[in-house]
Length: 186
Image 1: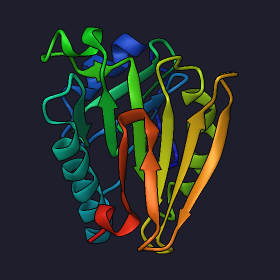
Image 2: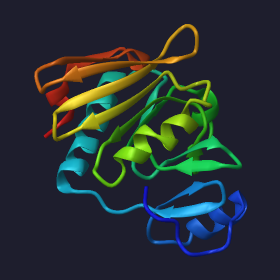
Image 3: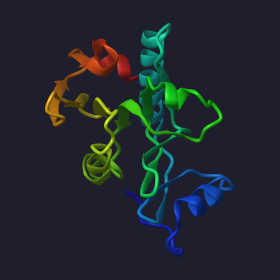
Image 4: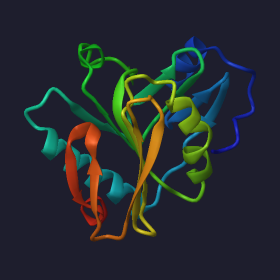
């Protein structure tokens, strides 16, 4: 995760007002704001390919796919962030298409980068586990290539499933999607 911007601690309301006037995106965590850096071409292509794969798969279902510009509110007073790809099947989330955030995601996918991998695997994942709606959290490693899927089980604990290699058949049970890891990459 990037270093917090030098500023006083903000409330969520202050963050949302301030961020709506900024040219760049910022995550919010416990009163601190973190600038989101630009990604590589590889990162962008993996995000796009994943979004398109899930969008095509979910056509005709009540689920919708979003990428890049939609925030997830993990805890409305504590943690807001921009995932690379998010899927929600929640009527509440989809009832107001003018909203700035999703609060009941089913699936979140992050494309790993050296600057965010520790945060994605650490504090972000710890926070995301508070979302009762979240069925899967997936980390896409474009270098390996590998898809790591943390899937919530019947006991509400997350279990790790690793799909290693471009030709490996991956599964995202939350949206009933199956395909080779390569289909999410460029």
